Length: 259
Image (cartoon, rainbow, N blue to C red; front, top):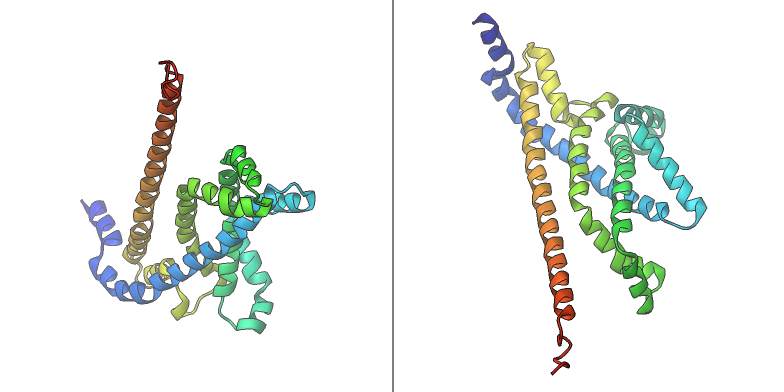
């Protein structure tokens, strides 16, 4: 029983969790959300620009977008954060001081943009070509047709994948601690790690993991709900189209002209 007791005391020391909880709620959780939400917004904007450039017929737009996507999807997230956070640190010191968050958010945004751009590109390209042709026939320019018809449909189709990327950003925000954080800048993982190093007990780190689960598990269920709703909507549309086709195929279906 001694190994089991040691394991329990190492990971489930309620006193260590209670001691770390206030700081995780007041410092770690807000900082984690700031990093993840800011990177998601900036990464989504950059990702949309990459998606549009990636499907462009202009080679000087399409190829740089593809190269960017390959590079930032191929590099480990930790390497990207260190390269940007350390490499641009002198510039950051001159612009906003020693706060590493702007560079951390920039690094996370550049990583997210590569993935979100591919998500948006696949969604846009999944929209039927007839949609674009119909919009152009109604007098829309190519840009207006993309902005008002194609892109909204494409984004709607890939919402589950976009939310999955937001979940990945929440977890990747823990890597910003590589850049060095003062006490007021620490996110959930860093606070848990500091308490674990100080007390020699991993319970605070486990508590940080529970916070991440509390953030990501509901989003996972949101993804599943959105995906199910979109799939059911598509199935209903397909069924309605099949019924209409069957009605048109029946004798005398066209207004009873056979009578």
